[in-house]
Length: 151
Image (cartoon, rainbow, N blue to C red; front, side, top):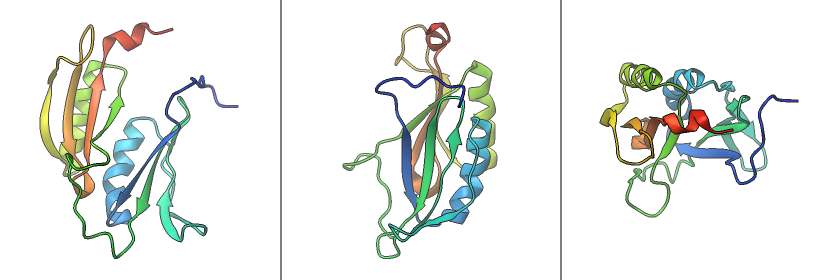
């Protein structure tokens, strides 16, 4: 049995769709490993007919899955402010990890949008940066000291 605590109402998984799954995993693989995820190999889901990776963080039970887009739909570019996903934010345990991931995202070719720096979004501090990854999808990495005090 995994060592994480299941929290009622917590996220189980996030699934994203990308234009080129192998290329996207060149970015997401190192990024997710840094965050403690076990990165899965590309597999095929016979029910949907699509390729995907299932990537699980066993410390918290959350999965971050990446799917291959259908050929006829892959041409539509992602836009942050259209209906649908705005961005996905990942917590890190230490302020320094925000800076470390900032450097890693730059090395992997991500487009930094803002930060790293303090933002007015959380009580007791909110140190973060925002970036675009594969297919212009928007992400955030954040350290909130108040979460360290949670039971």
